[in-house]
Image 1 (cartoon, rainbow, N blue to C red):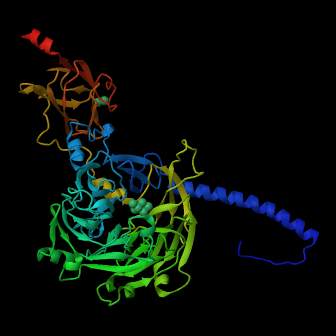
Image 2 (image 1 turned 45 degrees about the vertical axis):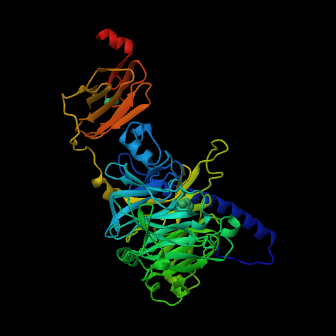
Image 3 (image 1 turned 90 degrees about the horizontal axis):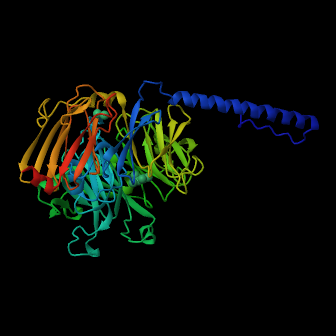
Length: 602
Ligand code: CUK
Ligand code: CUA
């Protein structure tokens, strides 16, 4: 309609009247169009009662140090997985538990998570592990998707601010984590500006031990790896090595750092490294084979995304309105690394991250323009000026954007999530702070179609979707009782030292194995609980009054907590997961006798 323009220099009153009448009916028609579009959008995201979503989206919980699981397309919150924060709800990192020891041993009880990365086999998601960084404390965690639980946390040595996080395809040989900020690796002698370093760490995907690191000049921001596992890429801003905002943006050019992984491995095997902080650190200026390529790209690039066909790595411009596409096959072949640049399409203001639909199109978030721009890769490479296909306003100021399975070899090209930093007028205020927002867009057609917006916890960063049909078979519903599980009828209390007790209890509807047990004030008490249910969805809890303890014990699982019984008297323990008609009766007493009462028994 809008491209039909009729110019009539002389309009009679009759024509004007007719035109107004037409506008009236036009707006009525627009209204019903909008209603139809809304109804269509609603139909597209509606998941009938009892049906599953197509995808689970793992979203970084940002400053909560957690991972949020949303159903896509419905936008329903399925679960949150505590990672770098204690959460009594799931008995996670409660003092006296193993998960507390794990988190405490790795650093503070809080983290800042940005980049969820799913493990891959053959270049596709295998549903085994999810990795997530903690920028604030330079850590990374591995979540076991069999249980949706944090299984391992490790600190990255020598670096500060674990930022970009991705896996090396096709089979998750390494997890790559960027050390973003410049800092001295060894802090035991205090401040040492001359020793400031940043770089990329290559981790064992299971133990999360850092196998080696490569120093990179500048600040390593976001990373990705080539589909064949040969190259690790990172956008690299502050190649000026500035320590103030002004200095960080002084130059008009920064880089994409490309690390030749086999060359780095060769350097390690030849002993071309220094041992630092318990790991092997490669200084790429001192290796016989070239390990690091610094490909020039405009001003302070941000997103770093390899296309699904493995041909290109895209650096999203941030302070430049462009995306730089680098032809991966040329990196080690060209004399001048600028010749590896395949295209530099201008896409709009503040490009932050780029994702892919698997049909040859890229989608870049534009922070300043508040848009997602869809552009065609082949057209941009061919120099066709019509590479921009569509633009969609989002609300507002998107950071990451993620098209379903966009980071694998087989993007599904149906949904795209825009993770927005500001919501302004989108929601009812919640005080001076507003909810953050995310929007789901249909990208299956030529034109993007807005489907849904739903709030996010601060601060939404990145997302990774996995097909529910791929994930569901991998998830445990009832665990096989482990070797430490307590058998039915074996609940008991044992004295294991002069002032130390171990309590063993089974848990099954609607009873704890012991109705009561007695210890003495100041005793060290360990309680082991085995949920001996054999049906799914029958989790029990164990909350102990006034001791700050709550556990969640899933069917087949055994959980343990150790504490000092420093508060005398009667302390009921009760089940926190509503499990049965006798849920409220599902409780027992810990009786903590004083020294005087103990004497009286003798
Ligand atoms: S960073 Cu958040 S918008 Cu940490 Cu991935 Cu780009
Ligand atoms: Cu067991 Cu409620």
